[in-house]
Length: 311
Picture 1 (tube, rainbow, N blue to C red):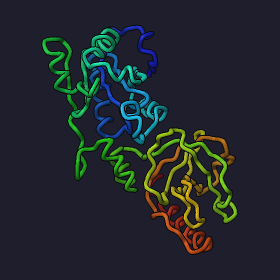
Picture 2: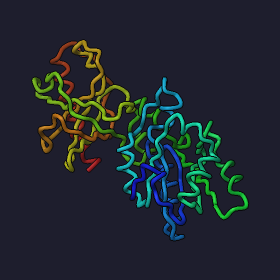
Picture 3: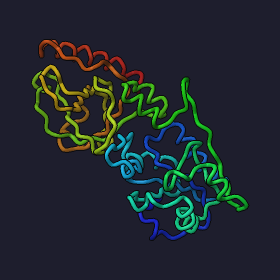
């Protein structure tokens, strides 16, 4: 997959199949769209192109209420590399770009550069100034041309259509298993290991204290989770606490991961990927540190019992 970060310097291609979107949190609905793009491209001997934006458009349009992200651009790239796309085009989204109408976006950039023969988009997709570019717009715009538009129907779970919005709500509610089911893969993020207070180590529960690499990363509801940790190709299971450590009368939010075995060491200063697999319990204020440690032993035993489900 070739990554295009400067569309103006990219040499035009003869023909392609295109999809456009923010693709925040690549879920089952997104996967269906991407696979259809790749399938059609191979069948028709065309190039497959996915166009996305960085930063997320909502971060420019509504700067005061920045949307917490399901994934940052680097994690998005890592996932998209697995789909056999020919091109990933990342367009810088700024105030100037936000004013471009869908007509101008198509006529000045997409059509002359990518020469699309197909547009494949999700059923609720919008693009361009004031989100005027949607399925109806594309059908009208390409009427009486040789460009085809395909709308991919949504994938539904037991209660609603799968979307980034619905998955975001599940994560905020701590319903991580359900969120993972709708995503089609475990929810996670990258975090740099930073200096902590060392309390965990003093009580035989050493932790890696993390700071997310994505500034606006969406975090699951506070509590204890069973997680998988990845570092330089090595994987390990652990338990992660998200919250303010109320037993110690603190109010600063912290992300702490205790690794259940020792295949990964010397983590300070490194970057980990943490995947959330299951919620263990809510965050609790214990009457004493001894009570906390006793509960952590129970949490660890429970997490160890879960490993067989994910191996």
